[in-house]
Image 1: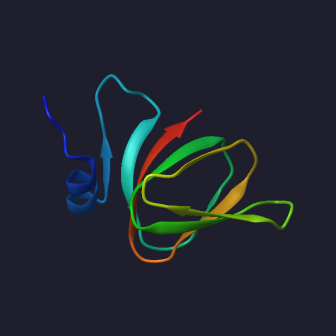
Image 2: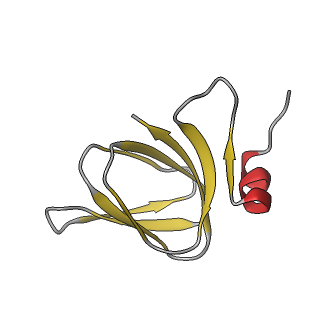
Length: 86
């Protein structure tokens, strides 16, 4: 079965997949605080990740980050992310 992750996330806001616990895609339209470890892949758009040590990551389409500590993630424009809760 073929899945278009960006299209699914844009249409539904968030898409979960059977058999892939902890993996989902979603449309990030506003900043959010995250307390759990996550692996992000930016499928469309750009995001800024604020880290607890006052540094940040700027992720663009095709880039990924594995974050173990609490963080704040904010889109520059509406962005589609693939996320694994690790």
